[in-house]
Image (cartoon, rainbow, N blue to C red; front, side, top):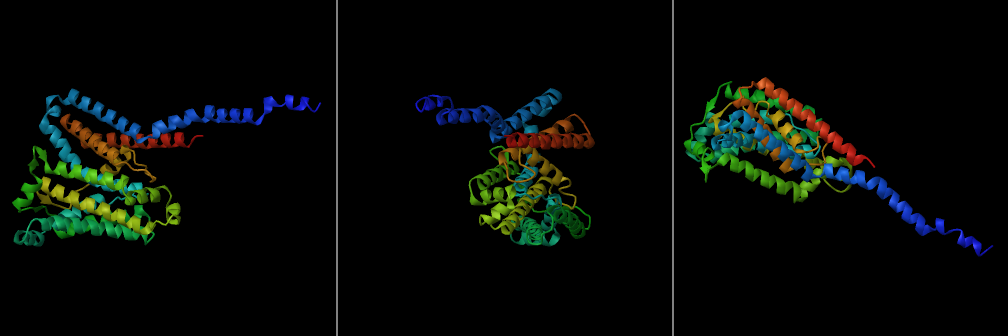
Length: 355
């Protein structure tokens, strides 16, 4: 009997059970996990954006013909995208870090007004037009610093702090400009930023340079890793030794600098500084970031996706303009696209969370 007992146990041996237990989870979990990884990968998201952009381009050719496909119109799209794109790249960092900024349009307006006042332009004429650029960057960074300090150290909700900045910066811009449009007199400034390099507008080159630098900063530096860590879990990031408050303030200063640079680009494109610059820029930049695949809840950001999102919206606006569709229709289309993007994010998140 003692010999028979081992002979009855092989079907329940540890090796057999271990193989069965390992095979069962693989059979049950590997397929959903692989599918979730596929849908959640950056390559898949970017491929979807490229396809959407290609389809939109085909629609533009079909409805606009040679007017849309002309080289001059392509440059027009890129110039339009460049200003929004610079702000959107800065917004990518803030949203990736778990924040939001509703004041970017007002900061652009204030920066453009302050950089084109009579006093600033007079000093620039006596020195160099780079003074106007420095003024716009300084004003943008200062506004970003105020936002960052209120949110990081003052514990004010990002929505409330930036909403207050939206009202305050726009109002200050109106006071400084006295609700008038300030004309830029310095031809050197206009010629430099309005010029071309080997046929490519300087504004587009600036956008490309900012995109490359933003990608390196987010994906290849400690600054980027800290940003994503804070956006994913601020408490865990704090316990890991990351200065969460300081990093958060840096993010808003970075976005403020992007707004200052966008103001310079807008000044060059319109040859003016006015308190009406940047209206609804916060909507366009946040929409481009969300469409690009950056999570609104933070913890994941993509510069490549943001650039594609900006190009999609710029092309969409151009198609609507060529087909004489009003701005209300454009706003409805943008709203639908934003909702669709958020729903897609939630769907991908649920798939990744499923066992």
